[in-house]
Image (tube, rainbow, N blue to C red):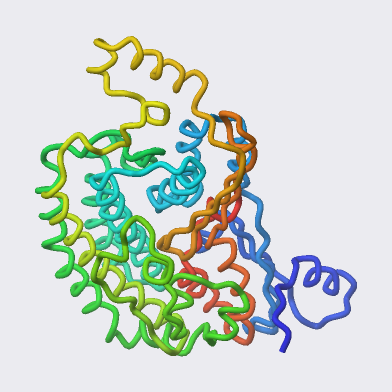
Length: 409
């Protein structure tokens, strides 16, 4: 069987010409269950989906192009706005690519903090997925419970960066600021309660016959087709493929942490739910290890000491003319990586998030391109939806967990 993704025109044109007895309807781009401005052109035979074509581009911001006009460090703020539910994962992918170009070493404290905060990002993102997914299928309570814990995650982000969502906290060379004094205690308190909260969510959903009826055996995709479509993240792991970049292509020291890669076998909506719930628990496990390691690092070592890449601390500026010059040149001109290109990928909550950066030797990137998991994962939707009821489309979209800022860049 040839795996293809239909275009909206292929569905609409036969209907216009009267060559089909089926009905063609628009779902979106403002339907409340499409998780963003996503339009689906749906061909229906009664209530059965014959074909469906995602029509994207309604949220296009030109972020990748805009980054070409910013210095490397200033472009970090734009990465927050692609997958806006996992901004720190976006930050990390971009800064890792630029750090490859620069061949700069990152202090251990910054490495540990990056692991800890991206795992908190994964938990926060999965909580939004869980709450909205449950709400789409009429389970109101889970939405309220999930957002209760997400508020705690956002409070931690605000504590370290001053912003709850668009943190821009990871910088080329390390972190924007050192971790605050009460950071460890706040995170430890959250990690202590989170496993019990996950148990609470599952007690409401996993054995619920209504939840099972809407998810078990719905939207099935096998491992071979998932790989052919480029599916990554929980959607791929739900088919039995143990592919997680934190294990298979480790970065930021993940190879030194102990954790499992949750997988399932059936490749349906229910298994995608089970995988993400297990990932929340594994993220807690990783974050606890990172929090313990922070105790052995020295405060203030949160950024590289290379003054040609990271601005010197303000205390140095008042005493050193050289530091003042470095600070001035970094913020007016930026640093200049050598000519070349680099690619760095991380395991975001939605799958493989990669950043490709090209340098022409100047202070601004010549080209930036994201391998966005939401964009790639979305092409598997028509394959999963064919033969299902139109009501299942809502559950299917939610199970893929797309973020449209990650699709339209």
